[in-house]
Length: 139
Image (cartoon, rainbow, N blue to C red):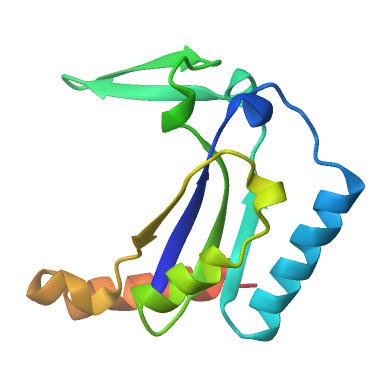
């Protein structure tokens, strides 16, 4: 099972405050433990929303809204992609995250859809296309 693990933004991340050397070291050790256990598939920190944009779709049109965005608690400051045997295992790994690195924040876990989750609608042709795309982006 794969899980998107999203670190919610807080006042410090939205202000663009960079972590200290100690925090970077703690996170490096945590990420290394995840990688050594075969759990970590990827992950990155994100710049504050003031450096981002949202593209909205409505009635066949799209519009762009530049950041910053007001609802900090709804924003993502970073993410990991985990591969674990269960949601509980992913939660157990998140609980080991250094508190000093995320501060007063919240981390949300969401399972990633796998091909078999889509049922018969995900035809052989669509599966082959997905496999080609995964092979292409893994290089």
